[in-house]
Every structure is written in C-alpha cells, then in structure tokens.
Length: 530
Figure 1 (tube, rainbow, N blue to C red):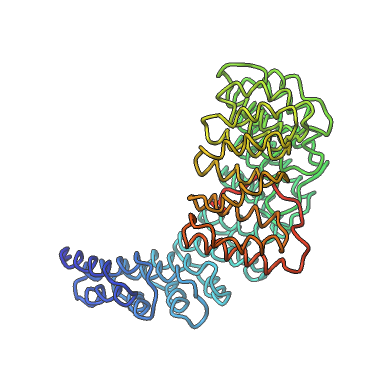
Figure 2 (cartoon, rainbow, N blue to C red; figure 1 turned 90 degrees about the vertical axis):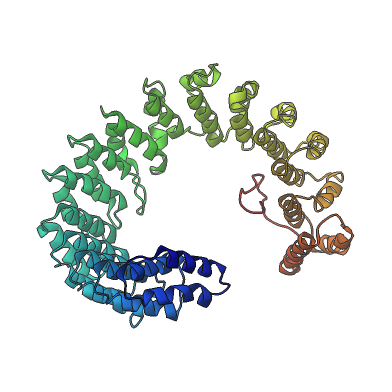
C-alpha cells in the first residue's frame, strides 16, 4: 500500500540534499520496501530525477529483473536514456535481455532503448524482427534505421519485412528505413508502394521519398511523376515536397514539367506545397517558373497567393511584376499579411534602385513600419536616410533598432548625431543595436561613445560595445583600451573583469596581425552578447 507521507518526506529530503548521494539516499529504503506500490513510486522518482551513478544503476539493474512488468518497463526506459549503452555496460546488457522479456511492452521499450547504441545490438535486434508483437517489430525497424549503417543483413531483413510482414505500420516503417539507408537499393520497394492499392502505403512511399538518400535524379523524378498522377491529393502533396529533397542535390531543369504540373494541380494544398518547396529547387528552376508564380499572386485563395509571394524569385534586373506593385501600393488592413510578405520579398531581390521608392511610403503605415525598416537594413540607399532618422523616434523598439542598423548600412555621417541622441533614452535592447550601428562609422565622434558604453549598466550593451571595439581596433589600440579599463568605475567589477578577459583573449589571438580584417555584418545576432 502506498504511504503518501513517506513519499512526501523522501521528496523533501531529496530536494534539500546538496549532492547526488544525498538526493538518492531517501529513495533507497523505499525501493527496498516489500510493498509493490512503494517500490514503483521510488523507481519513478529516481527515473524522473535524472540522477546517475552506481547506486542508481544498481537499483535499475534490479528493476530490470523485477516480477512486475511495469517495473521492468520503467527500467528499460531508464536504460534507454543512458549515454553509454555500449557492449559490457549495464544498460546494453539490460536492454538486449529486455528484447526477450515475456511482456511485449517491455520488449518494445527495450528495442526503442537500443536506438543509437552500440552496433553490437544489431544482431539481437534482427532476431527480434520475428517478434509476435507488431509494436515490438516497429520499434526494432526504427532502431535498425537509426544505426545508419550499410549492413547488408539489415537491408535484406528490412526488405523481407516490407514484403511479408502482416502489420501495415511495420511495413511503412520498413519502407522509411530502406529509403533512408539507401534510396537506390530501395527503388523497387518504393515503386511497389507507390502503385499499391492501400492508400497508407502510397502515402508512406511519398513521405519516404522525401527522406531518401543516394537516389539518382532520374529515379526521383520517375517516382514523383508517378505519384503526381495519384488520385489522392495528399499523396501528390507529399510527392511534390520531395522534389526538394533533404539529402540529395536538388533536381535541375529536368524537373520543370513536374513543377508545372504541381503548380497547376486542381487541389489547393498541392499548389501550396509546390510553392513552399519551390525556393529549394535547383539553380534556375524557380526563376524559370516566375511567370506562373506571378499568376498565382492573384489567386483568390489567400494561402496560395501568400505562398506565391514567398516563392517568387526575381531574375537579376527583372522588373517587379505589376500585380506585385498593386499589392504593395494597396492600402488598408485588407491583405495585410500578404503585403508584409511582399515587403520581405523585395529584400530577397537585393536591388534597392526600384524597391526603396516603393518601400518609403509604407513607413507611414504603422502596421508595416517594422517590416519596412527591417528590409531597409538589406537595401542600403541614401534616399532612405531622412526617413530612417525619423524612425529613431518611433516608440516601437524594433522599428527604432531596425532604423539604427539600416543607417549603419548606409554609412552616411549625417546619422551619427541622431544615433547618439537616441542612445540616451532607449531600452537596452535598442541601445545595444545603436552601439553596434555606431561602430560602423569612422568619425572621431563615435569612439568616445563606444568606450563610454562599456560602462552601460546593461551587460548586453557593454558586451556589444566590447565586441564592436574588438572588431574595429588594432592590437595596439586594444592595449591602450585595456590600460584605461580600471578607470571605468561605474562598470560593476564582475562585468569589468569579463570584458577584460574578452579583450585580452582577442589581443592574444590577434597579436600577430596588423588589425581587424574581414567584412563586418550590420545585422547583430539575437543570441550572442544578449
């Protein structure tokens, strides 16, 4: 019988412990208790604690031989989480023994636990492919796939499973494994599944094709062509997504007829899938399909027109399609999401000459200001200078920060004083980006601002200032900066020492070079130096 008071007392004692031994100790007497519920509760608590050590391993070795199937299952799950599951370890021995357990749930957990373990597990797993329980066989197939080894015995066994297993899910998993391990050798199985009467097998073939490796382009296109004639639209959708495969090189011009068929498919979800996959197509494919994609910009189905905006690839120097111009110049909240996507698409085009005049009027629309200022970072153009300086007063932090970086990209010294003024009264998120933006100007007015920013109370701003100085100063200038760091009394000691450590490391690494080299990026990462 479960004694809740004992459980709560053990939990409290474990929480108060300061070392692993102390966290384990309260549960060991409960595990040794003769009551099944108490033992189960103690084992679950140890498993949830994620504690490791000889004492815990000993408990789970005992649990792997427990009379209760639920306890043995818990032990298999724990051993499956062990980092070291190689031959001779307690985890490997327990899991391989678990494949022979009388309880199917335990055997399935053992098979799952052997995924990514020692290749010596392959032989016992191949034996377990003959298990009477379908869930066990499915987990065995998945485990064999995850070893990712070109072992002939594994491939032959998976072929037999695909052709002869009585459970459809096991056959599906075998097909996934075959295509993943070697698409060429799995070609006949993929062809058979693509023509199967059972819809689930045809869906599995289309999904497996997307994850297949080592499959020549001609065979991939053959299978996609076959699947695009399927009566089920989900099969066609999965097939077109596999035209931009995960592992192999993207198909080239030979895939154009298939893209055209998919973009003209009667099913909306197939057309959307084609548009979403199109940016990953081979060189020149997306550009050659631009006229058709432009037509889809006016599709009445919003999901299709939005996908078309993201998929549209402009050829270098090509004019912006009229429908695109109408979309950008339309006003009001109708189609707002589409207009945001259109703004972003102009950045991908990377041509400021005709894009900037289209974008600047949109700065007056509050719903689009954030997107426009962000895009202008990648489209530096002096015509945007005044508008961007005005955006430094925008109450929206993102708009102000984007404007600062866009001004840095333009590089006109007229922006320096407005940036410095803005630095004084904004949040750390914005100050960090303004400091970074200022570091791209060479004016003598900038250096005092950067060095004083080392004393910023926000660590992220101070670190960004340090990184900016490191990327713009020579080793001799860094030494001079180091000599004055102790004078920055406003900077807390831990932060000052951290900056000193970063500067000294950079000085040591770059001491043999004349100074910073390489192209700096205006865009500032979102994780580094936050």
